[in-house]
Image (cartoon, rainbow, N blue to C red; front, side, top):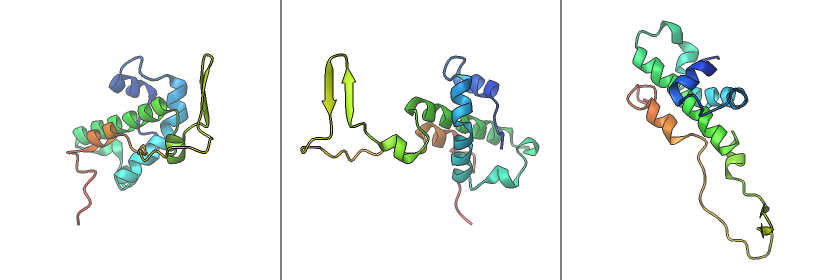
Length: 130
């Protein structure tokens, strides 16, 4: 797909927001997520031939925002974003969640970053009408 380069991502996000290693790790999944959101608009239309530069820029920003979200959360799957470790240790303190009295958390993290949706709003790429 190659919608956005690492240099473009650094330009949109800021120089120190993401490493090239993190970018390489999450770019393919981020592009897939944004493709799904936009009903694969740029699979059927050449991004380099689009005369609406605002739409192209916002689409690229959305991909970058999604890469940053995956990087910040250190996961790119719904399962990974919502899993809780059984045990957490900080220094000499350990908290274990595998006892009988577990409290279920109903807070689910979305696969799509809010910033990604914000970037795509007002572009027409989220439109679902006929």
